[in-house]
Amino acid sequence: MNNPNDGLKYLLLDLNSYFASCEQELDSHLRGKPIAVVPMLNVETTCCLAASYEAKAFGIKTGTLVKEAKQMCPDIIFVQAQHEHYVYFHHQIINAVESCIHIAQVLSIDEMLCELTGSQKKIEIAVELSKKIKTTIRSKVGQCLRCSIGLSTNPFLAKVASDMKKPDGLTLILKKDLPELLYTLKLRDFPGIGPQMEKRINQFGIVSVKQLCQLTQTEMKKLWGGINGDRFYLWLQGEDVSLPHSKSQSLGHQHVLEPKLRDRKSAYQVTQKLLIRAARRLRREGFYTKKISLHVRFADLYDSFDSYENLEETQDTLTLLHAITRLWEKLPQHKPFKVGVTLSNLIEEKHHQFSLFKTESRENLMQTIDKINDKFKDKVYFGALCDRNQAATTKIAFRRIPKMSEF
Image 1 (cartoon, rainbow, N blue to C red):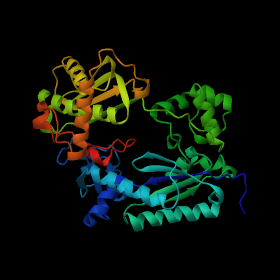
Image 2 (cartoon, rainbow, N blue to C red):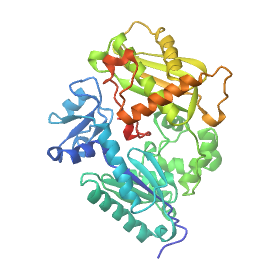
Image 3 (cartoon, helix red, strand yellow):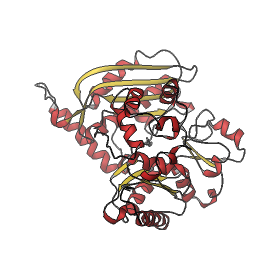
Image 4 (tube, one colour):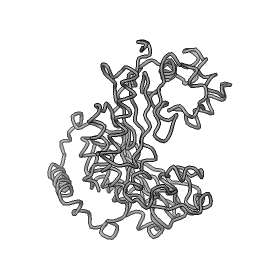
């Protein structure tokens, strides 16, 4: 019989080795083999975006350099990322999950959170629901697309639970099992504890999850330096304390350059294309920007260049192109390896301060170009980009899923 104090409330679904699993679903010859998804083939200086579980058995993971992966597993197969397929499968998986339970929040390309209601909060029903979701994804989307599911009393613990057993796991964390159930975990197994936070925690003399769980709420608040400590303490107790809703504060794109594009002229043209795409997103999502930033990492030394310019509120592509040109002129004479553009200090359209000198015809032009590109798949672009129009194609940031129209 269920204890009402167990309070199951959330189901978090985490797709296992998602990019690699998509590739194995697309090509049956890759199934059961160690594969790694990479941004581009035959470039040893790039890194793996994802690894199949067969590759993970050799220690290969996201971020492993291609040349290191070859040493770790001589038989590894490298596959160039096909982001449009990952987005397609993502939407198919959403439809499959929605046929079983409503998705409260899509967290990333490979994670989604569901809120349990009514009888779904009962342990046996929640477990059967989880099994149904797994079966539905495999039958409606693909046999290779496995997921781990975590069930708990808050989203934080549901995420922790989903990571405890992979692949194809199903784990419950109930209040009655806290905090002892967490003692086998490492500090870095908790969302929100990265290398820097772990170092800070260690400086307080805490090296284990058991020690962390024994802190008082006041001590936890001091450790985190504010309200996040309160939340973390309550999450570990199994309480459901939500984070405040935050709206997008920045958007941007970055791209690792192919070897043939690692010269200043080509890198600049790719940067322009990234900016044009970001400006289009800015208009689509209903924002104006007040700050533009340029990031360039160099191939010939372990260094990077960062610069920014404050702007009057704008969402105009030409205005932003002029700004990025001014920033680019400050760039040192080194060989570019990676370029990135960020638009920040975003203002919602409804709060935009209209200028007396606003060029309405320019805004209409930008909106018209957006509509044409949406309809005809990016057939309209700026002349300077003609010879780089196939560079910097749409990629996936794990926390942002592109629309299919962006491919």
